[in-house]
Image (tube, rainbow, N blue to C red):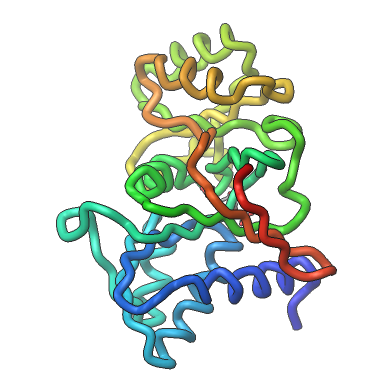
Length: 230
Ligand code: 5RP
């Protein structure tokens, strides 16, 4: 049986999967909540739904393929109708996000940037008044010269830590890059911080997602709440 946290993810995953319609191009997110969305989409495909998915990670692609979901890429589709993805923090009101603790932020941002609509799925523990409250901001960087990039991130007020896997070796993203997890004090102006991070040479992408999500589906013991961007 699911533990309560997993049950919330399944609930919000099923609700989000209902947003997908026949013929859509759908961005498939990464992480444990996005995994529940993909599971529910697999069920809908078995019931006859037809759509194509553009995955944000090798892991999500493998899961989707195993469930019979058709996979597509940007060579075939200039635009994505709907992307459904998880988040590490969601700012109340703006729906600005921290993403990337699952290690897929570069692909996730490419997919989000090509989407007409991004819907974020999470449980209520991810809602914050200011980004940076609980989660570090993951920053994907070139493995060449990462120490120099880390120093420059430090000048922005971050405490960057290179991400490692359980065995202690440096984590490598699907694109062959590194991630620096940057602890900040809660951010007053995340758009400004995103711009400053992205301006550092060697930074490939930043886990702050500003003005991307238009709707958040947030699960709690009371059910799934729909929060529109204000
Ligand atoms: C992956 C992500 C994930 O969406 C984020 O880490 C949330 O994951 P989870 O649903 O497992 O809490 O950004 O890069």
